[in-house]
Amino acid sequence: MRQDNQLIVLTHLSQLLTFITGFGGLVVPLVIWLTQKENVYKMDEQGKRIVNFQISILIYSLICIPLILALGLGIVGLIILCILSFIYPIINAIRASHGEIPRYPLSLNFIS
Image (cartoon, one colour):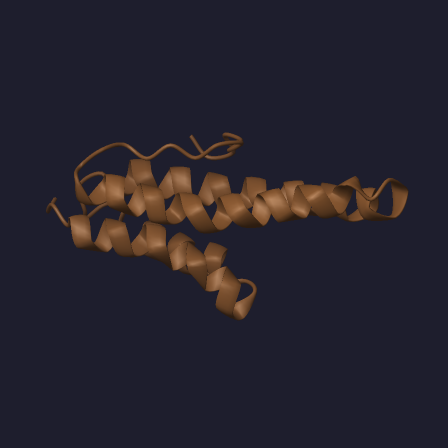
């Protein structure tokens, strides 16, 4: 197993593809994690955190959609989710480059 902090950083930053393509932020990290979790030291742990965060953001976004019609609170929720999904991949990419463990807020533990 090899140490490859650059690939881990790239995996965190690949979540930002959602802002470009609309869906790449889940697909690309998932593919990198599934193909490299056996080869790269700490990829399994960090990949799980990334995928859990992306699935959580997707679920929270789906919950916010009906709230837009009901109370208008859904718009505030979506803005907060958008900010979190932009800032935390960058913060955690920096943490990963220093060998630290990433932390994603509001992340549900689907894959453990």
